Amino acid sequence: MTDSVAAACRAVLLADEPRAKVRLARAAARAWRRGALAYRFDAAMPDVPARPDRPELLPPNRMPKRGRGGSERGRAAMLHALAHVEYSAIDLAFDVAGRFGAEFPRRFVDDWLSVGADEAMHFAILDRRLRVLGGGYGTLPAHAGLWEAAAATAHDAAARLAVVPMVLEARGLDVTPATVARFEAAGDAPSARILHRIYTDEIRHVGFGAKWFGYLCANAGIRPAPHWQQLVRTHFRGQLKPPFNDSARTRAGLTRDFYEPLVAG
Image 1 (cartoon, rainbow, N blue to C red):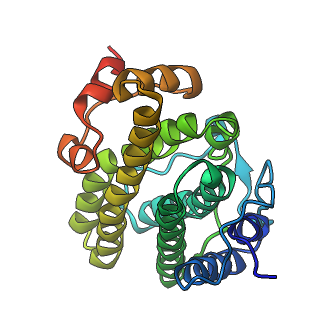
Image 2 (tube, helix red, strand yellow):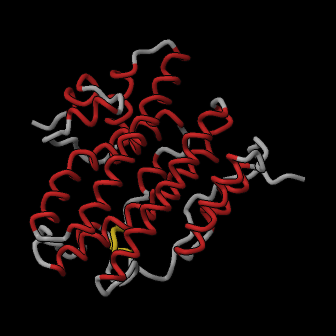
């Protein structure tokens, strides 16, 4: 029997070793593209994905300060934090496809498995860059709370799309251009190019979130922006804070009428 897309997604989530997770993510995306995975959702997604022994995961208030990336050590710490975000994003992409794919057309799975392949590539190139700088993923502690948003929205596709791509990933659009500029100012052009490539891909990822959130709202006959605001108030534990990269957000379909009403005063 042909493996199902849900089983392939579950296998990615249960891979605890980073290279294995990257390999399985890329293989699942390729298999889906060539029609080798059945459009079946016969495997449950785990409540929590498997994690490697390293890095040590710490709560946000125990994370060491990274600085602003001026020193080589500070840049390496920032790249490590970003690598952890991308590692977690692999799981987020495959989880949303495997957990909610049955509620959407096949194009939903097309989009999110392509995102998962992108995130695997992002992690791999960041890890490779860290090794050039004398480290590698797992050599520093990392944030323990990145899966919290997925756990809080595991029951509701609209809530997941509202919070993960349309809040958390959209925040990356706001902060990455300044980070790229700091790396360039420090003379670290290779790292700056990697971050710019990731930034370009993330615009598309946020766009997938906005597109499929809009699909759900259209099917339910409700206005997207007010519904998004309600879901964010309910399921997102932080606050939306300016400055916003309005142009990148608009390119992704996340217009100001969504987020401006929620801006912290």
